[in-house]
Image 1 (cartoon, rainbow, N blue to C red):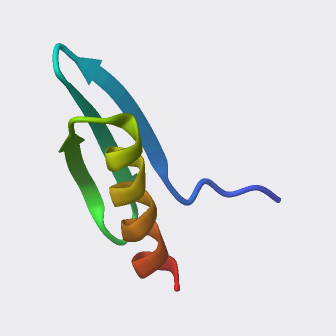
Image 2: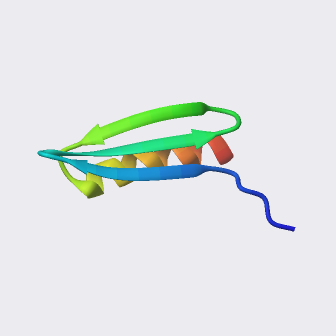
Length: 52
């Protein structure tokens, strides 16, 4: 059985990257950064904290 535990959307706006992370526990959060790697690291840290 599969269960969705999070939903992540990435967007690139003119000079920044945006990530929208939604989980049942944490709700909707938004992260912005100048590089994709910066935003991806923020999302990964948040998920590690929430699911560890």
